[in-house]
Length: 94
Image (tube, rainbow, N blue to C red):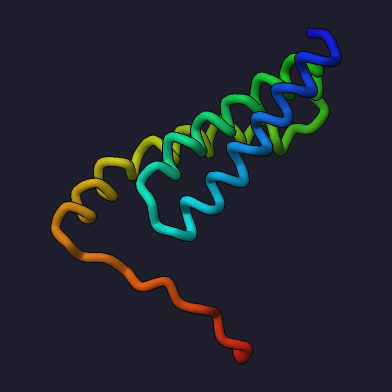
C-alpha cells in the first residue's frame, strides 16, 4: 500500500477512535459499530505495514473487535426498556 493511502486510512481510524470515545461517553449504541470499524482498520494497517513484532497489538485487536460485537444486543435491549445510567464524574478521592 502506498504512503498516501496508508495515511488516509490512519486518519480515518483515528477519527473513528475519537468518535468512539465520544459515543461511549454519551452512552450511544453506535459506539459499538464505530469501534468495530476502528479496530478493523487498525488490524489492516498493522498487517499491511508488517508490524508482526508487536505481538500485543496482534493479539488484542482481534479480541477487541469480537468483544465489541457481543454486547450490542444487550445494550439495545436495555435502552429500549427506558433504563439509563447517569454519566457521573470520578471523584478526586479513590
